[in-house]
Image (cartoon, rainbow, N blue to C red; front, side):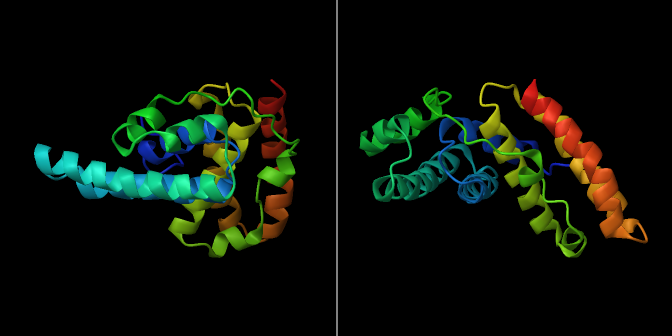
Length: 193
């Protein structure tokens, strides 16, 4: 079921999935990583079965190779390390099988740090808005690694609605301050639950 306010259920799922597997990565790194994966799927999926398999395997080698180089430079976690140490043939299945990183302890993050509610969102292009939503999602998931995907949906929907409403308002900065406080409350109730 596609989520309102988030373009492409696939990107949303990838952010949740990989934030849970490698929460030590910054939200920006996770957005770039999952965008590369989504771009590979977009490029490879229209091909016939045989070409599709080769295309996806080649893309996965490149994307996971970049992740492993990042791990080599600055270790992410033991699970990622095990997959990176695996042979190329088994690297992708290893990453697919990775579970939530149970060793991760999230640094305390307040909702006002997670939510970027500023007037400059009104000048953002669609791609920038999607990136903001994905970073927001990644930061929320880091705070609640064991939460189900759908628990994050209301915040994302409200964030998209708030941006749309405040950008149409006469005094958008004031709108972001007033309406943003309601969204911050909802965020706190999610993180405190």
